Structure formats: structure tokens, C-alpha cells
Length: 92
Image 1 (cartoon, rainbow, N blue to C red):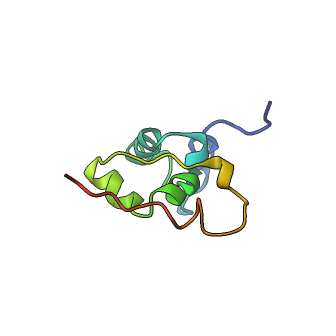
Image 2 (tube, one colour; image 1 turned 90 degrees about the horizontal axis):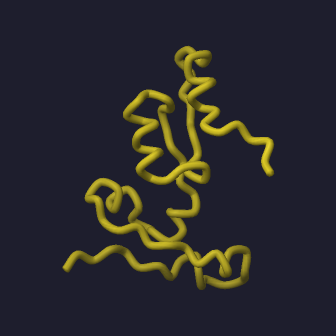
């Protein structure tokens, strides 16, 4: 279980006035994060894990390119494998 509030940005955004509100991609997909921005539920979306496996994540989102999955078995292990060895997208 978790004590986190699902989509708490939606709850706090109306109370924040001019303070920017960020939601995290850990709690939603890229499509859901984009929807939250478009619907005004948040001002920013943080996608930490997808950035590990997609060094070009903004371009992938912008161009609707596939999102590579991260190898979570390499998280918190020594060396570059799983952190800086993921390729940039190459269109055919």
C-alpha cells in the first residue's frame, strides 16, 4: 500500500495561486502526464525513470517515437550500464 495521494497536483493546483505545480511521471504514463498539462492540472511533469532509458525523451514525446523501457535491475549498481548506455532514437 501507499500513503500517497493519487494526482495530488490536481488537488493543490487550485490552491497554489501563481506557484507552479509539478506532478511526477512515476504516478502516471507519458500520455497521462501530457493530459495533466493540457487540462491545467499541473504546470510541469517530471519523468525520472523514462529519462534514464531515453536520453532524448523530449524529442521522443514531441515526435511520438517509441519510449524505451529501463532495465530496473541495473538501478543503483556501479558503472555506466543501465545509466548512460541507452541509445538515442533513430528513425528508419
